[in-house]
Length: 481
Figure 1 (tube, rainbow, N blue to C red):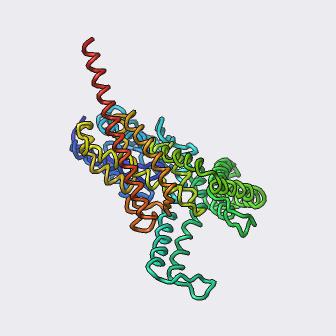
Figure 2: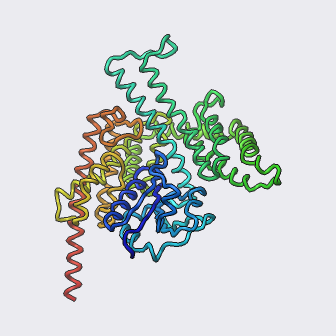
Figure 3: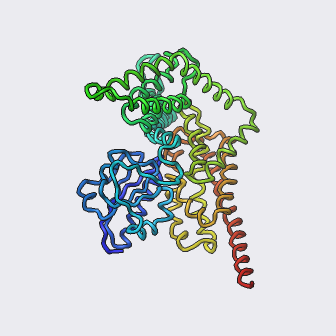
């Protein structure tokens, strides 16, 4: 392959948190090592960063698209006529060498109207899970910002500042800060539903879905005991999204067609689903949500611990994959109802696989490759503060022992988290969450995390040592024959 290539790339993933930035960094590092120049645009939870200019795209020899939630129509139009290499973001990290080696042979001429087909991936483009994760990604900043404000208000009260609500006269600063924070939880659900619909049918679906989801969660308007919660956001987001997708195919003639997206779709969709939500969908989803909350509050302790083991095991099993995301979504969705103990399991278990793998490389270096040792410090730091994904390379190198160790220790840590009554208000900074008031009680969190990590590290060393010894014995037997 020719030297000094000029490259541009886009990375994104369903949640927009971990893979987006890890793959971008890997592409930049590999390009530097090979003597190429590269600019990577990241489309993460915080929006588009390091955006590619038309000039950079025009001058590029190749375009690399490492995506997990596809590209918008506008993005596809930017690369018309360019040589494009496409790969699921879930495979990009482990195939980073192959990306650059295969650029000439496997890049294709890109057409603006073509869809980006990514083959099999963790969250297939256009799937229901992809639309759900688009909604979650949009809701995250609301919960994070709101959760931190609520935590600050609680910390100020603990430091002795007064807490006076509006009903008792002039409200105190702590009440104001807490009330602003809870707005994040209030609007989390309408935003989630609206972005699910936006992911399906683009801008015409956004406004009506936002308004209807807000209606479905307003107990005063509906006269229900509970809002529709995340169940309402999921049902309404998906239903209204696909309704608008169908509606956009209607043809009204040249004179009226421009009014379809700006007036007809929002009006008709809001009318139809607003009335349906008032009379049917809202009360039904409210009853289902009330039933779920009652179940969580009344199930026997033994069954609750069993469910906690299952959630913890799922979170640790595939480290950011579909099983992990299913458990994460369940725990995350309960925050809006001010149920914080299940999300605390996420706060503990998500840290464990990468941190345990990194520490294990220092304790038992003979069990790991030079590449795994080099990545150990990064796995510990990133895993402790951001995401579970740094554990993936370790699991790929030795799937059976690593997945077994992670899953068992994750399940046990989930049970301990629930047993100690740990609560997590919102996503934050991982191991530092107790220090900023997002995780409490502080002592219980660090105790459970220490126990979970000790168990995880011990199982990794024990099981991987056994696995490697067995592999060596098999090779020796094969050589004898």
